[in-house]
Image (tube, rainbow, N blue to C red):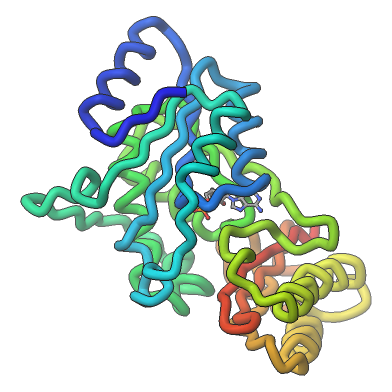
Amino acid sequence: MLEFDKLVNIHEWCSDRRKEGLSIGFVPTMGALHQGHMSLIKIARKNCDIVISSIFVNPTQFNVASDYEKYPITIEEDSLMLKEEGCDAVFIPPVLEIYPESDTYDLDVDLGYIGECMEASKRPGHFEGVMQVVKRLLEIVTPDVLYLGRKDYQQFRVVGKMVETYNLPVKVEQCPIVREDDGLAMSSRNRRLSPEARQAATSLSMSLAAIVDGWQQHDPHHLTQKYTQKLNEHHLIDVEYLDIVDNETLRPINDWNETENAIVCVAAYVGGIRLIDNATIY
Ligand code: AMP
């Protein structure tokens, strides 16, 4: 597996592969890799000639400085995992390579409601940072297909909108959520959970599963109230939102008749670590 840290070098390498007629699949990450990330690499491997990943903890998408500073960094293990999964090249740039000081990277994307609700409302500026970095990376890597995890469902929708707005020549594919055996959605942040918080964190996916199983018996409001309260009863859990929304508009649903496709999304602090998860209801 090739490793690049300079954008000119990876850009040139990718251009050469494209000239050879090879298709490129791209999996951007912030590192501290786990089997969730690896599932994206596997899907890219199956569908594209060349698989490229990136490891870049993007400072512009963190609205809390300490969260950025504490983000786990495990570059050596990450590289090994990518290599073993058959990734062809990884891009691990320093911050100045992505954001040279001479340039500005403000984007103009009208996200509408998907840029106001849930993650956007709790993490101001987060999606602006995500769009910035993904646009930069797409211009550098020029992939045919961008693989994103459904774990970050709102992010998938936001990036899709950015790609559409700038008419970028890339297909955006969503990949299923990979979970631990007890249901907890895999996340780089899980390794920061204390043993007690790790145990408590399983309640998030269990609540989502209970909603998916029992939605027909209750209205959406009843379910969100009930499970928010239930989760908050645990002394280590503090729910930021638990919303049942339309999967297109991300608007909360008051009545099941309002949507053809409902999903439930949750964000909560568990022992001080912020986790997100979601599940399709129907
Ligand atoms: P991150 O390193 O957290 O920025 O994630 C990089 C990519 O991996 C994003 O597209 C995430 O949605 C995806 N991802 C993270 N965790 C999971 C998971 N448990 N299952 C599937 N995809 C995931």
